[in-house]
Image (cartoon, rainbow, N blue to C red; front, side):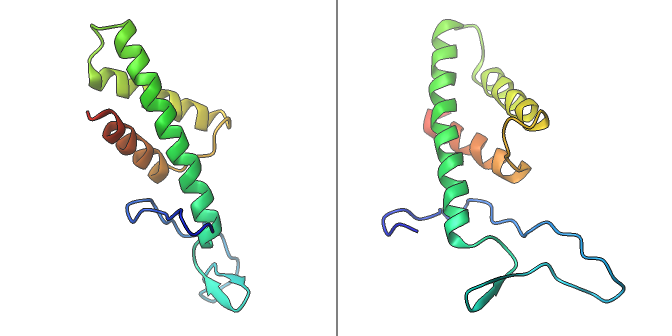
Length: 115
């Protein structure tokens, strides 16, 4: 992880999704060097954050462009259309974004736009 890039506290930190067979209780942990983690390592989290931040910046530019081309389109309609597009791309397997990351991206896009 680079020293100048940090994952913001509001970025989703989701546990690893796992299915562990057997009758005894088990936890999906990953062993990394000398520690066990229930979630992704910081390097993976930073990579996910940077991808989501990049997406939010691009979506903010797209929304600004659409707003200038279609002044009758409300801000909320503009954002709703963008979110529907994200959901469709995830369903088609084009993008791999969790529901929590999608919510974060949409909130971040709103902040970047000042909406």
